[in-house]
Image (cartoon, rainbow, N blue to C red; front, side, top):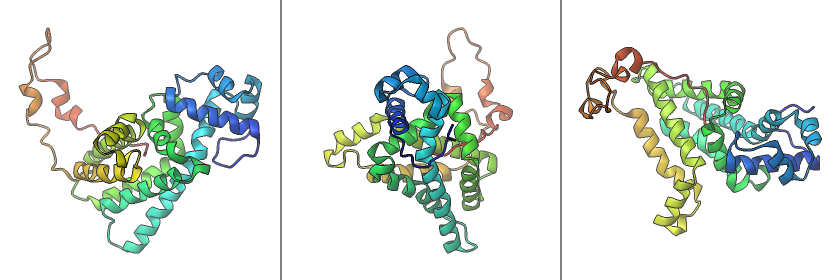
Length: 259
């Protein structure tokens, strides 16, 4: 059985199956896509899927890897190139985000390796709730994530690491949701039909928003703030919510993915 990787394949059955899985994943997600749906769309039998991929998980691993491996390798290469150019100086947030975005946009323009749906596939992969996919992405692309997180740490030395982890978590969530959802593309079309599905303009609008979030003033986690002004839920205690306690509010997430 071939390993899940980004290598090209000349096998027509395998290729049809990968394309069918990709199209159905974009529409239904991992849990909503059954092997029966895939085999029907690809016009293959279940035995062929098991032979080439070992089952549904192997199929989806191969489908994602063939798209994302190339992009993430290019991201790391581009980040290293920018860091060599900068010498001892840290990269700006804009430059780091450019290393993330440019390879994704390049693949979105390559019909042989993703085409116009690539960005939507990228976003969908990281917002899909399946632990199968989350575990695969976290493990496979951990070195790339570490490289970018280290670059942001050097770029924003004034932000404590645990706070920066939260901000990167929020940043990646905003990026993934925007790329995965059709709402953003529909909004662009409504506001300016000329920009319909213009991914460059979408990311140009998103970039300053993300950078503003990364550089925002540190929150005062001990201050009551907005939540204390909200009415307590019916039947709930009006005591201070657990989410405002310093020990819980300051627990940073583990950043193990990047869109």
